[in-house]
Length: 272
Image (cartoon, rainbow, N blue to C red; front, top):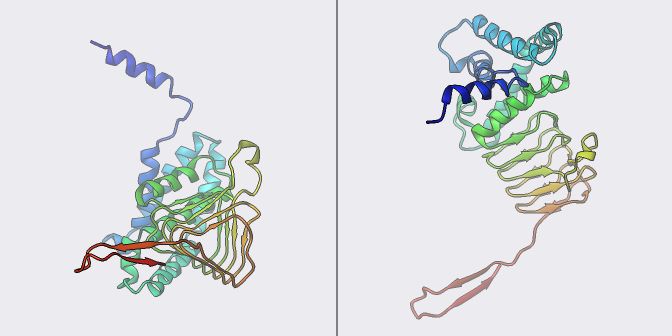
């Protein structure tokens, strides 16, 4: 029989290059969101212990990557900005409520909407990204990705009042810039034209200006691609060039419908 003890020790010895606790970090993130930022998710009124738990977990794990003073400074700065971040997130929950006729309350948005959850995690991870925190922002964003199927890189720059409807399958790349009052539906990709390590420090992803609507399945690629304000990108559109403000972009396709179930067994042929 294989010596399990020997193999386990060997695995531990070869895994010492990444001394952080992913499960603990994800639990701290959940505590921050569901028990500190949005107390409607928690019957307890006191949030000091839960916020301290988040603080201590983040400090300890960042200290494994940087020195302790840097770690404490980063988490202190983040927590100092939490009241403003909470105000912004409640405002954005209101945007979901106003845009979705199926939404019955702000609380329903906060508790159940996958797009809003991904947006909350993005706002948190982006704050740490701006401070240059290693690994932690991606751990946060990939946790949201695994939970709700929305992949927002923490490096993206996203304005106020983003509305993500349904959410599933959305990808927003690291150098994407999104303005204010933008609506994005499921299956949208804001990506790069091609991927190579030499472009790591270049703008690879598109810019979406204010008041743009991007419908389901649309793909917009390229760092030089700009979607002008107040434009509408239709479903399944493929866009690799800039469009001016107030544009309507549509993907034309022919759909043929054959009805073989007519009473007289005639075939009805439609082009759409």
